[in-house]
Length: 327
Image (cartoon, rainbow, N blue to C red; front, side, top):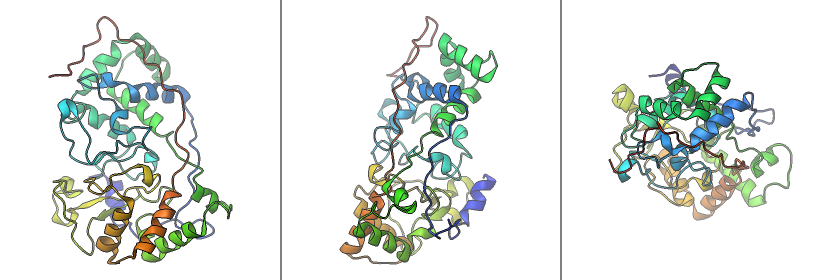
């Protein structure tokens, strides 16, 4: 288990406060230090040839047109297999303390390699992915220029994808503009919702620039969460019962776009999700009016979505391994 995950598991009530003492801070625009890596990673993110079928890309489950997720309870994998867990948004994912719901990947690069080799997701292997990328002259040339090596490796592939994903920040939400001093950015109802969000205790877990993603908490602190999803959370890594149903707290940034909610994708309405969290995590029974105000606030966390031209993917070569969509 990664050290960062262990440290984060007990960090539920701590956050760094900005000068005006707000528990949530603005998201800043992404800074691109290595544009060539980002451009290569963008192509690979959208390239379905990294899957056995030649149909599934990173964008299939982390669709940048729908808030960086796929708006399904669990994703559809190779041969229409049902995925094991809800697909988290890729937007602002560089702010996460670790990746995946259980934190098994320490960073975005490690995460990028996971679905490629997962038989229920992209159903490839790292060796096959390398063979495909190696066979395409434009990819070979880009990796040679960017990584100063003639050899294509899975590390280069996943590093490039991670560098692209780091650019997927969503700054300038109405809430961020309000934090920065624009008092007209939020309505009174939305400001009341934010005050309720704080007073109810939601900020104990949903804090920092991403309003979450920086700690692990047990799902069902006050009342047990009932689900048919078999995921055990961190316990699946540690084998410890104390870690059962302990999951990474999801970001609330762009939350109105990333339904359905929770690790099992069981709740489609934001109002229902707020009600469940208040009761199960905080022991609070909120009124419909209170829930409505909190939901109004949550919708102000939607920021500017990534905007760029879709990448033109290089064509396969004569020796590029063929896809196997029906195997």
